[in-house]
Image 1 (cartoon, rainbow, N blue to C red):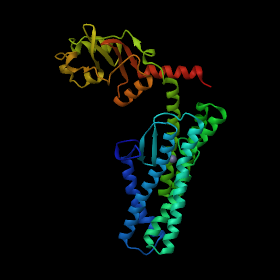
Image 2: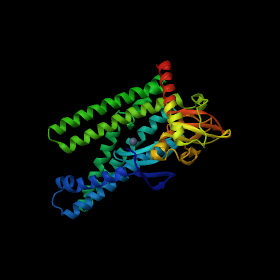
Image 3: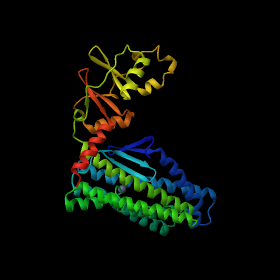
Image 4: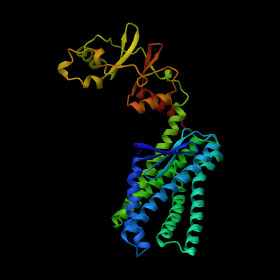
Length: 376
Ligand SMILES: [Zn+2]
């Protein structure tokens, strides 16, 4: 979902970015406004006018979403939550929090800020639209204002669905959290409800599609899929943060890893190491200091005929912050390095000395066992 993000501008210290998917949506919105919605409700204009109305409507929607997300971010900052910025993606905006809110009250106020701001903007637009009609502004302009008023109310309504991580789901979570004092339980209930609403929308979308309402059906289907996966993902993320956060990586490491020397030929390490131990990565040790690692991926990229001529030194990866971490690194940070680089194995090194290896598999095993022993 989150592909390439382009920074647009900075406001009050927040960077507003746009996901490439939003550009596609912006074109689709402009097109459906100009070709379908506006001609249906406001008759008698030229094609050119409808296109201008479509562009104005899409830009207005964009501004409305940014306003909504800004209100979230400003309240969040008041409560001391770190915000990375705001990204507009396929179904609207996401105010990116770096951490969980510290109290139910903080989360409640932060979550309601968005829908409240959208309702406020809708009411303001209502008065501007009314004034415009009385003064006799041009009909296309009044049409766009009316559309933007309605879309802000829809934005508020959609976000108030009690489907975590939508705003309404966050409101629900904060209330449950406040009542029972258990963030994990509150997140589970709110995200289960989110999944259920997602499934409902998927089924509703499919039924619409079968009944012949193709465009509407696809929209419901997509929104349902989005809500379902977002709610499941945010619960998993919370669990992982709870279980692995604050754990030093040395707790999970395997000590005494099998190592190779830089002068060995590729042929030799394939036969004597890869085929013998079935690991996908071997640290390379020169004397007694670590100089890099060799992975099955690097071997695979070398044609088999050349395995004899080349040595480990020629194809290995040097130590870098992509494959080496210190023993005191937080497990969550190790996970984010693995996530970013695609390396599921990292070497734990202190003062050029190899202490051990950490694999994604070991971390997940620890996670599973801890969940099993401490589940409530
Ligand atoms: Zn919101």
